[in-house]
Length: 178
Image 1 (cartoon, rainbow, N blue to C red):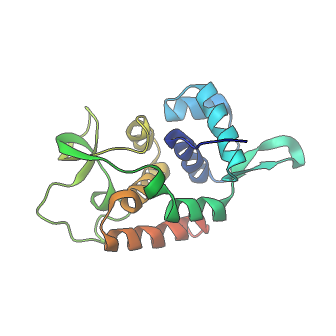
Image 2 (image 1 turned 60 degrees about the vertical axis):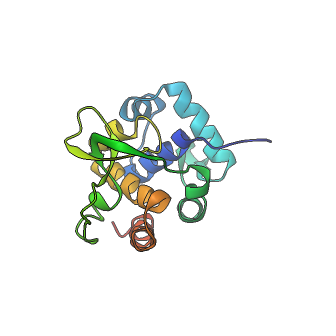
């Protein structure tokens, strides 16, 4: 079977990681991620095929993230599959070293911080493409998801030290020490 992951699939997986053991519905995820239920359904199918999600056949529950596989893909594959694009100064939502949990761990430089372009954003910085277009809105409504996306962005486009810190923090969170 030929299958290509899409950026929104990773957003779905990160949302499921952030939700932990809570049950979910396709409509709920669609609403919380500003996507359609059919996009969620297609993404879940692609993630099952890629072994990033595992089906729970006992009790017929929804698929759950395969945390070791998710970690391996985020740490080693994501930055190659979904390259971050940087742009001009804009208003947006801080990401990478400029947002929690990395903010404070890394001394900020004099250059403007990376931000996801977002009209309601309160920070001016250089444009850093979000993993998926609805990521800023979804992140602002879910702090755990926001922090996972920040770590993923530091891996996608951060300097070596930022990447190392983000990977260590991501591994803690995926290991359940959150």
